[in-house]
Image (tube, rainbow, N blue to C red; front, side, top):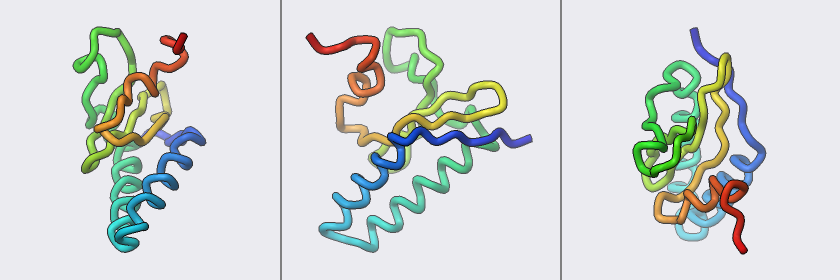
Length: 107
């Protein structure tokens, strides 16, 4: 049984920024990438454990998981009947400081 998807509003912003950045040089590539990311997000409803646990990369116990999609990471949690997608971030960014900004605020 597939879970329901919940998409954080930040994901919409992330995807728009990704699209805008890539489309400057190659609009067709931007469209293909966004389509691929959406397709991978939809797969999470049927296969919520397909991504790796973020705890495997850091020494913090967390329920966050990530799915690699090209150069991007889809950050999500499987929560009861839902898969909640929180962010889509470039893997080259300091994505941990973005994800855990509330837990580790900047001084």
